[in-house]
Length: 234
Image (cartoon, rainbow, N blue to C red; front, side, top):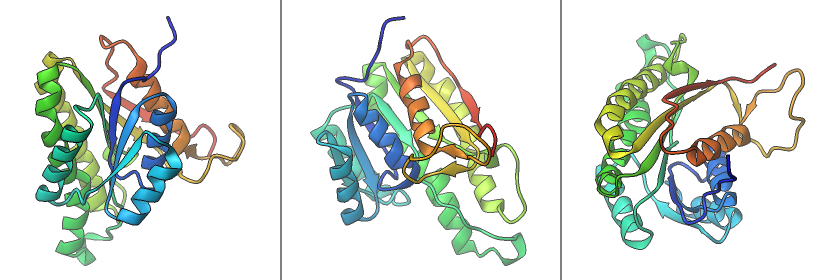
């Protein structure tokens, strides 16, 4: 198969001021894509964009807010064009046992991890459908396959993401849009300075980022719908 890259592509990565999102944005940028990144803190987001490179552009957005998501999407579409790649990465953890979990904490987690994905996806899908091409990546979790005690809200958000993504696939695949869910195990989000294999190593965010680049470069006829990604020997 001939060598492929992402030159000329536009990617939107949510929650990319730090952690997994910044690694994903960096990898997409290194592969040739122009990248629009979102986050809630303007200063942190701008710093991330500077560190990633000249073709990375920050857009402040709290994805729990319908108005903020609509404004961000309109700006990206007007200034950069229709995304070829949308990475729904932004998310929060937290929670606790059901009996002590407040409604505010439940709403914070569900609002960010599930409702925010819905709002962001809804904002970009019409333009992607009109062009009849695109990739939508969902950063899920092993918690979307198995619930753990003390993580009811988080598990509900990630299980919900699975259902949302499966239904969305059937809505958009006829428009040549792929929906791909990546479910990582525990992820090391620090700079990738360690060995690539050995005992006690978690999956690294850089590895997850490279997988997204690889999937985005596959021929459009190919769809990986749901992928579990583990650390080999944690």
